[in-house]
Length: 86
Image 1: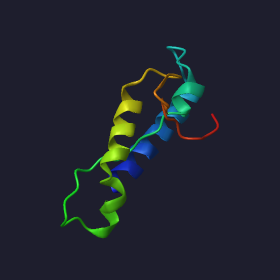
Image 2: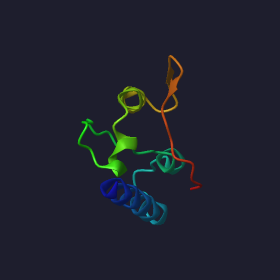
Image 3: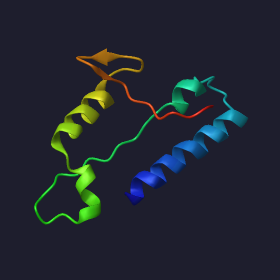
């Protein structure tokens, strides 16, 4: 999805800015591991490129992960991170 690409790019840019100046001493390693996800309510008329984002079971896992604190796990669901180096 286009907006996910833009959100991920904005997160990366914000992290780069914080590497240059981090007056609040935020945990940049933790912030660098944040992961975004796309959740779309599906219908039979969805375009083919949207189908991967309409899986309701994946939605439940993504939402549950989003609600968890950092470094937490609940019933096999972990707070999800993208794999990048800070």
